[in-house]
Length: 207
Image (tube, rainbow, N blue to C red; front, side, top):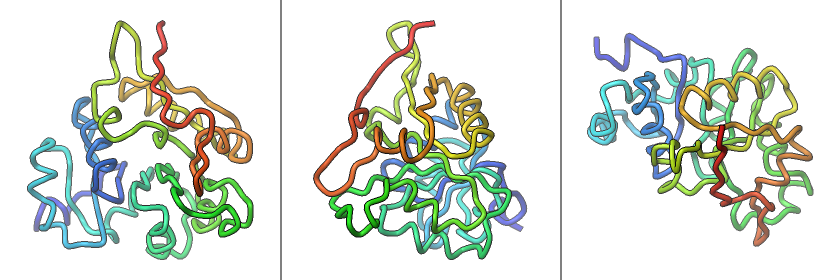
């Protein structure tokens, strides 16, 4: 039995492009185990995972969605395909790291992109977060200049927001909660050709 078949970490990243790998590096720095999955065979990206660290576990999408906390690091257009992996996401916290670049607002019914994504994950608790930093910055050590790099979080579920804020702290970031998806989500979203006020802001908190 392979490592990917007999163990599911409490955390998973779905999508293993630049952003997914940057997130994996954040977990590896702190020695926190995390599963990583794409729609491809895990063997196809096993060497990339191993290069990041031994706690980065390549697995299948079906295995990855067994995790309690799932980082959605796929292209925005691919989120419905991931959502189909489970009929009900009850008990799961989904961290929406997507950005809806080039997607017209009318395609989302005029809603903030995070609220649109949340509708696909029936029963799940969605937190918008980690999406406002580019991959090159997200992959760096968040302890810089004597402070900590800020990550913004928005959610309609206070418990889920607190859970991801605590995880962000463990990863070395300074989490700042922006409120619900309709208010905070608008500040950190990109859709069409427009950007929220806080997207791509590389900010630091000094304790």
